[in-house]
View 1 (cartoon, rainbow over the protein chains, first blue to last red):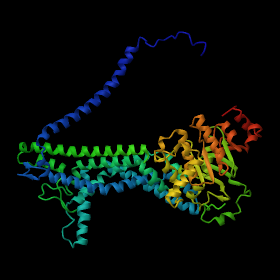
View 2 (cartoon, rainbow over the protein chains, first blue to last red):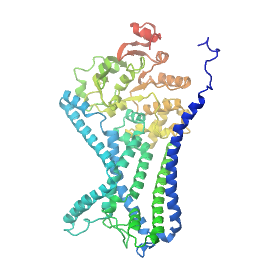
View 3 (cartoon, one colour):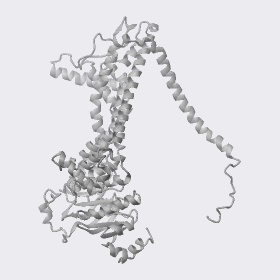
View 4 (cartoon, each protein chain N blue to C red):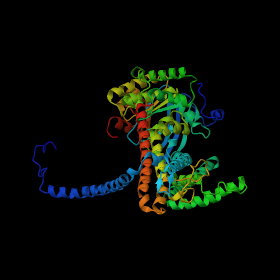
Length: 344
Length: 274
């Protein structure tokens, strides 16, 4: 090395072929830029179109009054109210189950394969055999749960709608009526509670996956530190892991909410109403919904030209609602991150 | 020793015929084999850790010294597909016996990790963590006293006393590691396991940790893993040399570093391999 230090190299830093190499480098960069550009442009066209066509119809009256004259005038207040109410119920139903499932899958489920447990089961005797046997069941249970979550995420939303009608409305609802109300029609019809539960099923995988991701991001170091101090597994989870994962969990919640707010298919048969003169106040009321209202306005209107601005304005409201939810989520996350950096 | 037994039926274990003959050792490992899946990483380890002494475990990377250390407070339990054969005794009790309460074991055998891992909480809350979860203090005043005592023991009090309620993550690397030591000391363990506690620190911070270990051995049994041989020579009373999952030699540090029995030990400490 030292002898050769001063000697001139055979090649220079600007070889003759540099131009060709630079051209070749342009190809992937160009492809990436084009792909990104297309996406941004599409988003801009969609949002711009909706905003420009919808903004002039937005007024205080539009946001606070019910539709009039066969939906050709008036506002969309019942639909806004119904959407918020629905999403709230859905969150209450979906978040606890989703978070608990994710905690089980990431923190408690055994991280071994069935084959490994089986080989130990074959060797084990007595008390140890029972422990391994129980663990084998946990392995199977975990496998089934993971498959179920993945499958649930892939089911088309209209199928959820039909399932909700068949299971919640006609089976559970009608069952409640038969047992508690002597056959009188109370819960055995489309209602906001059934729509919310159907939506909760649809959004469950989103919560589970997001929560698991957040839990996985908590360093094993911190769990070890807690366990080494004599903490139990649950103390470690509740005092170290969950606080650390909370921003991620909240993000998952917000994603779920904004996804749920826009879905129409699952509520089509389970509770959404074409038009209601009153707001839903009980769990077995039907409700109006922004997404469904858009569908109604665009397909059921007696005068398409006259309803078009209302249609655009409704879509705009739905978008703003969803976006501001996302924004709130991002803000909560940032505040929490900051708080931890300060260590409170 | 008035510490609560880790096993719920200690009298049975104490009368056990397999209990170790020597009682001078605070911890004793007997014929320990350790497996990751089907791979055996520790082979027939037998070693005593005397009370209120510093025992250093040295050896090349991957020789199993950290695994052995983690076997002493059952931290390996958190790694899936691991298996232990043989016995580890704490004050004569087998810590791998079926009725052992792992939580209580870890209160008595504390641990400091290679990478400092303070919780993203305040300095105070970090030290108070073990006291709170184990319900070791009855009042706020007692809690504050114990936190201060632990921080003093870890030689950190003067540096952090004015910012107890700031995030632990604001401290320097060396301070964070001493905080982790304070956190471990707060629950008043009897044995302190240290897994290369200074390997990520600069020389000055390292020196502080070493001085601290020298102070702590008056009250604690310390077992430290290090791949820094000068460090082992400086701070330990007893040194064990591991190679490929086997305990090649163990004895007084002075002897190991001046006149080891095994050729392999001599080759390692003189830097001929590893």
